[in-house]
Image (cartoon, rainbow, N blue to C red; front, side, top):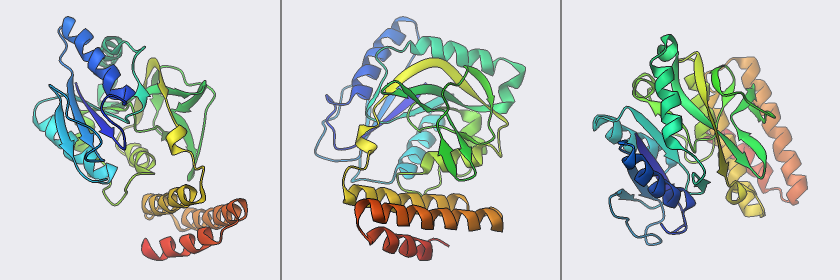
Length: 280
């Protein structure tokens, strides 16, 4: 299996994802399993290359392009499974060998053609944050999700920890939509995934994932996230029906007004109309 870790404004030593996966690789080698690690440093100068790791660097390249490039290289080199990870997901208490055993059982089953992605249960501060469900264009958390095969309709999952099969990479064209930059890449992926695969598989594992860096604690940060949300949702739903697109636009107007009041800034209203003109 090949794993991509994307570093952003973090050193190699400070990335719990990279450090825990380096330890996992040692354990897997003892069991005869080869774990190939790819690291994309998206903030050049802040991290030094690690030994025995395929290293890439670029200045804040969009995530969709990073995922596509490294996935293409990994699958072309012969890997059958490809996993992506943020730099702050902790795999210290995970037995990756057990996850791989569960994946292999599914791949050996009659349902193998129906499954292209495997999702861990991601937990942040004791709350399950992935997988989740989608209601039209709005995501919602679910209190619990059973391990095993699940319906892919309206499924959502955070990018970090997702494991893709070669077949998924071949069917999903593009793998990730490179019009998207950072946010909404995972939402868009699953909207398209359900058209190609009727099922997904939830792994019987819980992984700690830190969402603190994604919280909007300043007006500037909140505005950036809002702009990205508008950009992503309008791209993801541009081919949907007129009613659904109309409801999306109404929701975005509501969200812009609400954030404008919350942050006492008309920049959110302006951002809405700028983004709506930009995305066709």
